[in-house]
Image 1: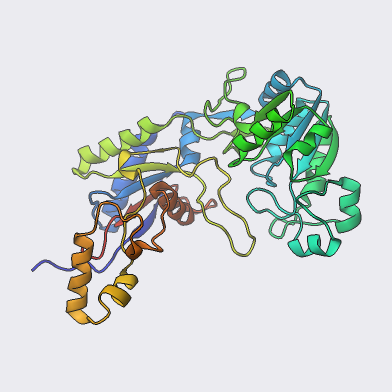
Image 2: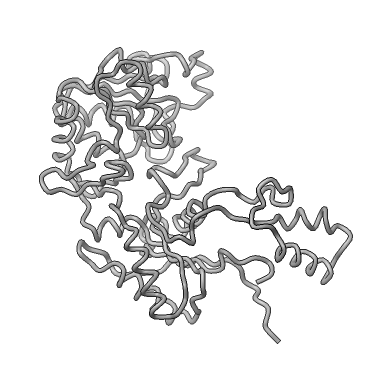
Length: 398
């Protein structure tokens, strides 16, 4: 008699060596997973997912650029005079080093911050502060002086940084004049500059269109900067500076370049070694939101820049509790189990619009699995930049 499985989805962080430029990442990932299998005594199965964090992919590619590379690109594309920089996220790791490069490529930076928070939820202010001050954030434009008069100094809940002062000081340290404005209408920046860098991530195309239609002379999104090599530097043809992270005080690690070949290589190596058809993806930030700090984690342009074809699409699942409470409410025990199992086995290829699928997370598989992997690996000292997800595509009948 076949033994019934009692465990569903399992997510494991897999340790691997520290990755350096030029390392054979496909070999390292494959060997690390196989060594974990042997060490922990489990087996690989078809449709397991091997996920590799974007950080080690970019490291193996040597995809870095310097602050001076950014400055040169900014100066060439925006003229090197007054540049409006709008809607950046507030992050020492993500944007501060980019801002250094931008400031070094201009004589004056007019920095326009959205308020009360940035695009991913880092708060300058609380909504209660906005309400108490009688401010309408959808229409009111604040100078730095007015902001300080109304709200004083405000430090980030988790980092303890006053990002307004931090960004202003950083611009000035790079030799540029700094002016700070607070507004949420992109067109406002055109009162101060007509050469603009819009630094928003997921709304960048709309912001760029609005500015061009409103008469801006030059508009660059972050994906327009460092999208080609400067003096032999790394670059990202598709995403530019989007998804970049601070590496050193003067160097930035860019988002990985084209890496479809990598995921296919790993998939092929695992097949050759085990006979199992696994799926493989590269993942960055998860797409989850922190209810305490109100921060949406996704500061990368996408959760996954590369994945095998088996990860295309969305889940196609039935809601078990809906079936139990509605279609089979009079059943129990083995009879209920068999009725639900039969419904799963016979479900349509697409359950869109079917009430029995309501509440089953209609999101892209790569966004869901990438979020799971980001939470599993973390971004600190766990040392597990590879994640093995097993049983993700199982259902109650497996």
